[in-house]
Image 1 (cartoon, each protein chain N blue to C red):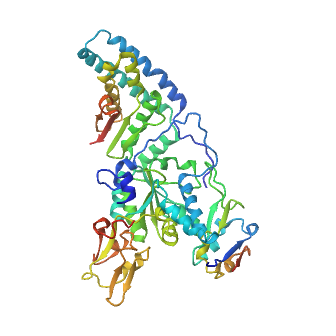
Image 2: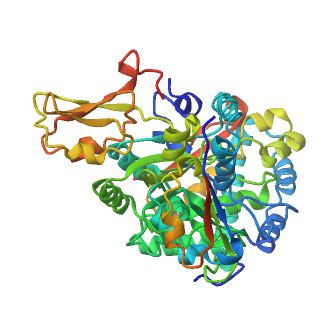
Image 3: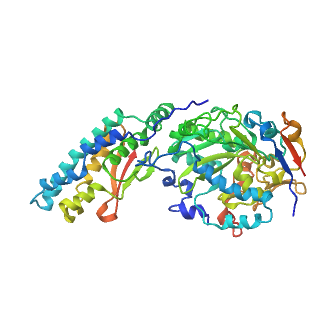
Amino acid sequence: MCWMCEAYGEEGKRWYLNPKNHSRQLYTIKRGRKESAYGTDPETLAGLEQRKVTAAKWEDPENFPQLLKEYNEKPREGGCQVLPLREAIQVAEMAYPIASMMCICRKMMRADEETNPDEYTCTGLGVGMFKWERWPERYRGGVNIMSAEDAKEWLTKMDKKGFVHMIMTFGGSYVGGLCNCDYPDCAQIRTRLDYGLEPALMKGHHFAKVDYDLCNGCGICVQRCQFGAIKFEVTTDRTNIDAFRCFGCGLCETACPRQAITLVERETVPALKEEW
Amino acid sequence: MVEAVAYSFELNPEMLDLLNKEFDVKKLAVRFGEAIKGKTSEEIETIGREFFTDYGTEWIRRTLQLGEEYPDRTYEMIKMSIDKTGGYYRFALLPQRFIEIAYLATQEFPSLPIVENNSHALVYKLVDCALYKSLKEVCGENVAAQLPCRHSCLTALKVLHQDLEIDAITGMDAEMPKDGFCQFFARSV
Amino acid sequence: MKKYPRIIIDYAKCPTPFDCKKCLVACPQAIFEVFPVKVEKFKETDKKEPGTYQLSTFYLDKCTACGDCVEVCPTGALSIDY
């Protein structure tokens, strides 16, 4: 079973479709607790922990396999998982509030600057969005609060562009982000694919399957895959999707002009059940 | 570039103090204890309904008034978001803010456990209630077990939505003596 | 054990990497990262102020030592050791 659903799902609902994981108070009384003028948000802290392991690959290659093993086996709290557009759209109904904002990964990896809503590619969720002005450097350009309907339209636009959707909590069950990602700019995709840190990004609840009768080998889906799961199989003149490499983002499905690709529930297939 | 502005996103402590003094739950329990001296449990039920309905109405109306008089940056951002989205965030965020103020001013917990908040529902629970505890101490286990104070929470939630002109069904679906906590809900219609 | 290249950054010659961003954009393997050195509450960091951001070779295991970054760097701040 999906680790996150086991911990934070309810009544058979996926963890990110459980409204409770999208709900939080607006205020907390801080009796006598002083906040520092400098700091790191929980998101950055989780990132720093990942970094210690990934950097070891070249800084300390001898110990890297052991560090990786320890990281993958240690008890988890919160997480990040791929989800298809249709479920991201369901999330827009319960995320409160939902806002578009700059992507921190593209900023760090490519010094990419998204300075206004037309350029934003990330989606922030939850009451923290109202308080972005505490950390203007993290939210350069501010956040753009959207209604559920606007958010659905925006997520569809991101899908059309070719971005993978992923949803995450920053330690615990409260959902904080719904990112639109690609390789190599997304730190989570990269950390999982290139370094093997499994908690960094869990595979989604689906995998993509090709209907060989409908597929005509046009190859559109091949360009959409950010996980290297899709190859053009010359022999059969069809698309080939490796279910073990597939993360279930559904970008190939939404782009296929012949509806030849369907998303199948991972847990309905014996050897994929525990592939997260 | 964003210039440094040290906004406060927290509730104004002066406002919380004012509300706390005016709606002290310990004094309330003592007043209720006097009102029900020598009464039967049926009479306590009737007196309790009236007593706590009045209190709940005053409590939430004063919260609405002070909440407007003492805004904070979180509230300003909520109002801006409501305007920007054609009212999408009005329910549940507007009632949520005032309900949080009402409880945080009169209870000891640092934050109100919100079970659900979105455009369909506002659900919260009280696990550790100072009013319930005071009723137990002042009026005894039996009176507390009748949960007369529920009328205060139920009325506050109902009046809050009425005064904000939000159509919602309000009620409770868990009770402290039975379930170990009280849970209240408002669902948009 | 596999030998990984090292890119040596002369930080004195690389004061505003987020503003310059040439190596970050040019690298075919995307091995660089840039981050603010100190994040201050209520304040956006000025990318043009020297020393506010720092460059790092975070994904160095992916570096091919091709030299594109050295070539594109306007101040000669980068060199490769392999």
